Image (cartoon, rainbow, N blue to C red; front, side):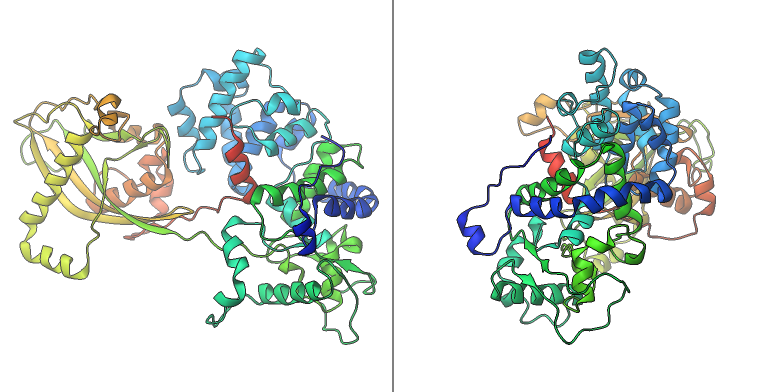
Length: 562
């Protein structure tokens, strides 16, 4: 893993002022003595206590693997509880390999990005089959496992195997970008905007001040020769952080330019690798750089005076020289992923054995219908309530027309939609004598994914006074011929079982809203505990935000073996 990384930069890149991989690697080597001498002592004094760190130092590669997968795109505070429960249930890789995927998903439920749990499960089986249940800790062995990319393999290999394999995640990118003044776009979503930034911004009234400052700074740098050295001006603005650090320091801005993410990551990987080559404890070093980015060199409120690398930080020097407003211009802000809006009709289907006019929901033996999503795609392989996409979202005029039609007409529409879903996904017909009752639009929820704003219109469907419908799913071969549905499994579950099937957070919110509005069950049943339901205040909307996928996560996901 050591040594120089060959640059693929072209002559045209050089003439455009684009820094090569070797340029950035040389800059990292230049400050490496300070990094090697300062970072680990700081880490020893300031690191947060985490169970997986202790287990990693004890050589538990499996524990490190689980923690690293959980921490991808997820905050440490959210991971702690999940990690503890996971390790209690699956203390070894063999325990995980023997488990059913539904149980794995249930433990993961609420943590988001469920494909991670699936990859952990599949990877554990591979470890048992190919390594006799002993988790490998060399980079070359780890990178062969399904679901493990460069970042995870480097983390485990450095912490447990003591290999000098540098990790690159969002925190590391931020530290390197600021310390070495690595600028310009590193996110593919900014590439086109970067090529025509001047024209696209003419009509824009408001823009991030930090991005404006960096653009102006890079423009001035380009006029003086691309990655030219920038010296102090006579007139300085007041910096936001004080320092004895010389403001006369020459600073070179390394423009990686509007290039593919993989190539930009290669620049950061080269710099990170150059740093780790100078240390004797690579695992501690990797964790120290990530910790620095997490608690000091933060995205929005960095505490520069507490940073062990402040004397060699190029972004800080530029701030002190008055050339940039703040170190926060590095790395340039990525544009948020544009969300698309989707709406679905969700059917909470109850089967009741009780007859007559008794109150719905009183019978403890009532069951709820669940459908398993396709194994690939969003929330792949997880259980959910039956639903259909709304291809023609209602407008104000349509809603007014529907209200004029009366309740009976609206209920008939919901019954028709439910039967449509049933015929598409279930190979068995609904029993002829089965009574179907519906309450339309009992509640709604809004759930925010990183790329989708999902609105669920929830309908209550009651089946009674007839034989319980069979649940044989439409076979996959029918789907390939243009028929079939999207469900890969159907089952009836008691309300008390909803917390044991691993419903995704979105469907947990659907159940909470439904249970509260319809007076059926208890909000919180879907999570396996009622405390959350008791604390939940009455509302018609439930919004949950998920973190954006990081640059590195997108890259490593593309490299995963399928």
